[in-house]
Image (tube, rainbow, N blue to C red; front, top):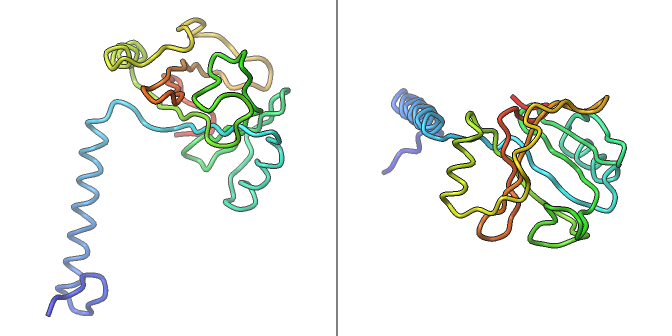
Length: 171
């Protein structure tokens, strides 16, 4: 008869469960040491950013960081920045694979340690650069967060942000 490590009452089950958790922690630490980037940003596009933001605040307890003059709302869970943006238009350089007026996940962002290295890796992987690496040290308008991001597109057209400064509400 096979023992279930979490339900068995004896020391063996407890020790096995603890050993499995320790192994998972060691594996997670090893993976973190090998990865150059961390997902820290997800952006949704919608017709009604304020309404959608209220949903995520009510349903999941996300905290509001700020609202921009154009109506975008920025939320966080303390680890990841969630931007609720207005629809993109054809004029937007990052309109994305779904085109304008798309409701849903529009793009996500990776925080990188070395912006130049990340750009080189994206170029080597044949990603399409959507925005230039200009204004790396630019300051934001009053009420804005001083971060920098570049926009790229993967082979499927999905928009990917990279940032060496990170996003507001992340750590």
